[in-house]
Image 1 (cartoon, rainbow, N blue to C red):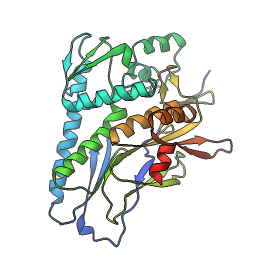
Image 2: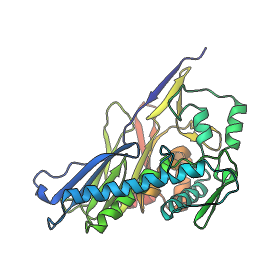
Image 3: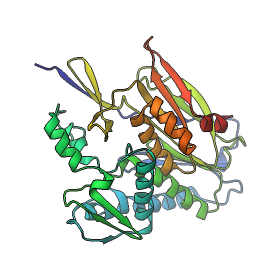
Image 4: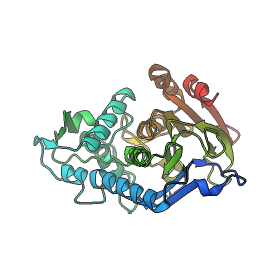
Length: 339
């Protein structure tokens, strides 16, 4: 009889470092709250002291509401929920934001050899990583059946401003790309107020623009994937880019001494089995960083570095080593940006 233990951790692998205490904090606007099923933190520099914090909060709230109305799987009235409820072969018009996200998801899916996939719901549910419930050890037939209901090529057709499902039971989940898009969208809202030096972080995915209050690129610490020590693996300066990290320790279960991550490899229908514990990606925006960090973690370090070289992806992997510690590996593009 198998012994099964479930673990779920809300923890982020990236964190903005503290602002310099000596800076005139009247020029710094900080806003935080809860949205998209997680927390958000925003820091902006108002050089001329012309913008009220309430204005920033209102702009942020509007931007996040817009994202949720388009992409929330938890809102039955959202665009994506309405698409998920539609039958097959019925074209559905989508808003420009949702079309952008779904096209980006399809592009990353193709470039990552299918490892990033927003249609993995049947497999995620099968393994017990969907709605709260008991983790499961499915059989081969059940895995094959769930794979048949998953996959961009199997289930979706994208067109200019519309989408249609190939299968009625296809379901699209945007958790692996939506928070990143949300950070980008909030950043654009800040820019409409005239703010150009800011950092937006939503659930560990972030976009940073301009300079921090010390006049430097925003200093972002990358934490160890060990949830017990929260050691800092390094610091990277981010300006005009998005950054996201994915780790395998946040949500998993153990059965008969073996660890099963919530990261399901679409190619096998099973949790990943490699030694890579986390992947951190720098990209042109937070949306792509979000999607690629998930894809790279599922690919694992060896195959991931091959894909990164092919597509000029800036990624840093952290692998578990034989001494129960961690070893880092970075793509040339990541090294160049860090330098």
